[in-house]
Image 1 (cartoon, one colour):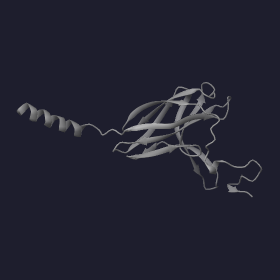
Image 2 (tube, helix red, strand yellow):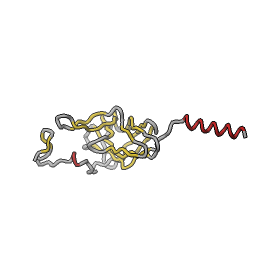
Image 3 (cartoon, rainbow, N blue to C red):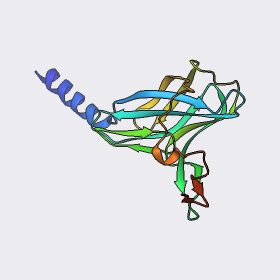
Image 4 (cartoon, rainbow, N blue to C red):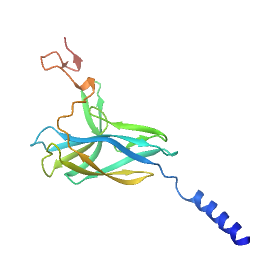
Length: 167
């Protein structure tokens, strides 16, 4: 009886000592570049956290680029969208999601070591604060047309003009 009580007490203490792990899955992933001669590309996907602990994507590495970073787009005071590195990463709430999408948060791959061709697969390792490293095989889809409406502008001269929509 003493052994059983000690074992249960030890297991309970150990469960409090171990960090809570988030349950992370990656869905709807795709990567793209602007063409076969592009020097950079990006990956987009939805992060699902089904755990009871908040997590944060804090880094990414890729087998296809010299440098891989977490990036986002922000509207500057002059109305121009600027892409920038996000050092703090992307929060993924417990029981929630965080979408990386064109025109917003994304994984940026700079200094491509080879062209990204339609149907190729890019290996990306995502590093989370709680869940640790998760390696994802991401298909290249150069034809996908799901850019946010704000990033889709007509080519007839009525698009962005000095940060304002023209007519």
